[in-house]
Image (cartoon, rainbow over all chains, first blue to last red; front, side, top):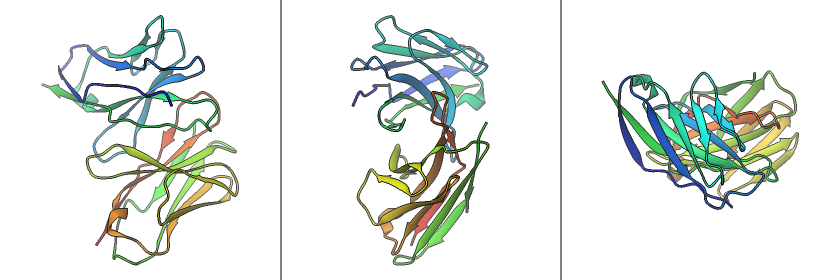
Length: 111
Length: 112
């Protein structure tokens, strides 16, 4: 199974952009890159996903490297409510679309 | 978009007692359904998933079981709880397309 590698934690200042990296060097051609985040004592929340092209939505942007071996989740202006654990996950199209969660990156936002 | 109802929010059960956690889904038909568990300070572990009524796949052997009696109902059970069953249990739903998953609000189970 293709796995992802993320830093354990990152810090950001409020209202500044945040770039959360993810390495997935063994990604296969049909793997989608998903990002979820989990606020304390809550279930994970979908943030964004993509396959090859960069993606934007109201929450964040996803920049995918040309070789797809890495990606970056971009929060354009961090707020205190963005403090959470961010998970980068590859979905496997031939396995019932299961999500396998790694350790994620704990983002701390300083006021 | 789909909505997941999961209850109860918190539960304290003695060792050896039975367990039944229920999850229901609204807003979609024939979704893939999942049970995850998160131990304190740890990541999410996939326990069971289901692609249809009566179809259950187990990812981790343990004293828990799952059932899907209806298309949008997913139940997690145990006949006798262990201390190690304590954790945060999350139900998740996926519509079977490339869109994102929806997670329930979770049940925090403490086995004492």
